[in-house]
Image: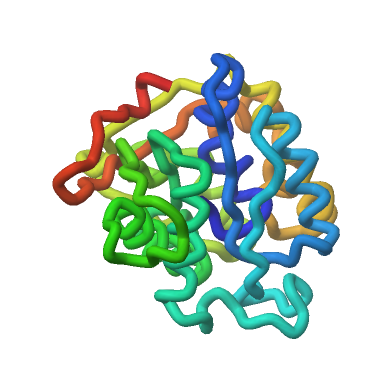
Length: 246
């Protein structure tokens, strides 16, 4: 569950691609941008590379881009319980064993949409298991594990200066906060192809896909070849799903 089209490619793509390649079901819920926007078509292309199902877009507006969903409420302005209810419906419909989302810092640069999506995802995963919450969203479903993609202090030596070059600072967590470190170099080809599917992001100077596109392959591989995750403790009743088992 991620805020924008391209978050799924930049952040958990390696793990998602590995899961799909092994025959696992994979779906991506994207909180912002309208389903009839150009970025929706790019998202569909990226998910096809990944091997996931079709886009599941909530269609909220982007906090920083009015073109995302003209005339629709921004994600950061939408009632939190409304967003949670929509995510609960997605969870109960798809019935995932593992949910992956943003970390509490707002993923790298603290984007407000990332933080809002993190908040709603954590609450929705718990609410999905409780029959007394959002009964209109379907039968309860208990997610086995919830992970947040994150960036540890020691794992961003190439990424931090790359972002600093366009005036962005990188938010990181202490190394001890990371509970799963995944080598995704075997999935690098698919991960990079999925990132490049977000063509509009390659054409602008500051988005991360464009910054990565201007790098040499060895440096880009160092940035993208390892994914870091924090397992978020669920309420009693959570299952035993583990990221390493994908």
